[in-house]
Image (cartoon, rainbow, N blue to C red; front, side, top):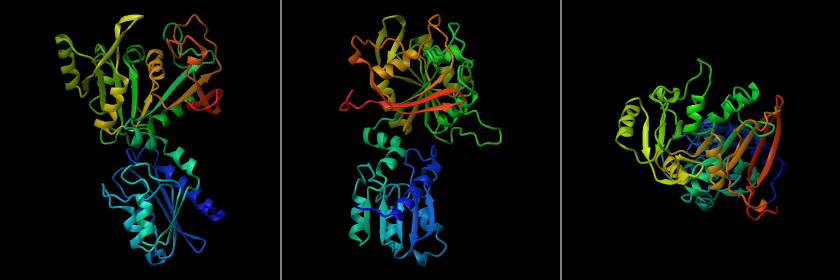
Length: 392
């Protein structure tokens, strides 16, 4: 299909409009729609949040004169849905209003849709073209595409370090290695993810809040918004006096732990009263270098977050042990490194990663660097796991 310059212009606009809702549509995708007739834009719309009208309906409703919709073209960043969920199918609204052509960026990977929306439109006489700016649209919804096709959340590992890969001084002090501007970007990253996940060592060392640092005038996303904290704590060492425990009544918090003894169960009961959810899961093995630490089944944790809490994206902010576990088990989808122009040296034991059991260079995890940006002197590196069939 050869798309015109006008097609490309309006599809770029649809994708741009969809971006406005990043962080608010989960578990749904971000979608934007633009309606055009005789070279003029009639209206536009985007899916604002899960449960609200979809982009196509938003654009139709935004048109000041519905009579103009007959014979118009709709540009939409994802295939229109054809199923009843919290809202009616978008295909019905498109057909009902006489829109004669639909240009979509890509198919909806949802098995319940996946081409059926296009077929329904075609059967009703609507001209359907798709594949315009497809890769850009898929990249925009990489979280949705991963979660809907795998049943697992999209996992991003975020690490802040010195130029030589140290995440803290040997004393454990890490405030602050990176610049204020980099830290503000991390707050935006948190807003765009459903869940922040960390390990108990980070909680004990830093006593973090792991929430959004936002202005008092802003609407804080409490339990009414899908935002939660997940803590991996196999021996239930978290303190009831920690910032996380003390805010768990208003910020949904899940502690994943292994089998508890009687004393730990008493502590779990107290934490539950404070608002925490305690979930016992399968143990994998004891860490060889520290027999007090038990590895929890990360795959099971991710599955629970997806199936029980509708989490489609996880931001991992953790120490070297947990980050290494995600790498070794190939359970991450993206990595964002903030590297400050500082050198801490080998006198610090805190590195980005721990033991990866690499005997050969060919065993090393390999990343594809997507971008390197200068953030007020820091390097912000965005990378993805290199695909198996890619040339090394």
